[in-house]
Amino acid sequence: MVPAREVFTGSWRDRRHVLAVGLSDPVPDFISLDAAMAEFDRQDAAVLVPHPEFLTVSLTREQIDRYADVIDAVEVYNPKHWPRHNRRAQTIARETGLPTFGSSYAHRRATVGEVWTAFEGEITDSATLATAFREGASRRVQRRGGMAHRLRCLAEFADLGYENSVKKVDRLLLSGMEPTHPGHVAYGGRFDDSRVY
Image (cartoon, rainbow, N blue to C red; front, side):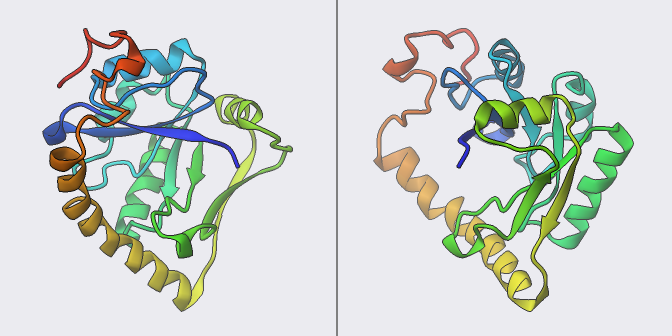
C-alpha cells in the first residue's frame, strides 16, 4: 500500500484535482493550482493528473500543457469514466507525450484492483513509486474485463452523484472545518496567501 494525496485545488466552482505521490508534508485542499504545483515541486513529489478533462473537476488540456514540466503522468483509464472519457485521456497523453497511469480510483470496495499500473521494476515504497513516476519508468496500464468489470465501473460512476451531493452537504455544512482545509490549525498559516477560502 502506497499513500498518495488527491488535492482539490481552487474553489468549489473552479476546482481541479491533482494527485501527488511521495509527499513529506501535508498539502491542503482549496489552495490555488499554482500553489499546489509549487508545493509538490518543493517536496519533489510525483505529480499525476487523474481523470483529465472529466466533468468539471479535472485539469484541462491547457492546464496540462501549462504544467507539463511538473506533471509526471496522465491517467488514461479510470472506472468512473465512460469509454469516450478514457479515449480522450489517451489522446491527451499521446499528444502531450506525457507518461501514463491507470488506477481503480475506487470509492467502493468492489472496485479495488479493477485497474492498475504495472511497472517493470520493483516498487517497494512510496519513494520508489514516486521515483518511477518522475523518471518515466517503463509501465503498462492494465485492467480487468468482462461484464462484471463494466458493472463495477457503472456503479462507481453512479456513486459520483452520492459523493457530490449527500456526502458533500454533510461535510460542508454539518461537519465543521475539515482537516484538509488550509485554515486548519495543522497548517500553521503556511497556506494563508494561496487559499481560496
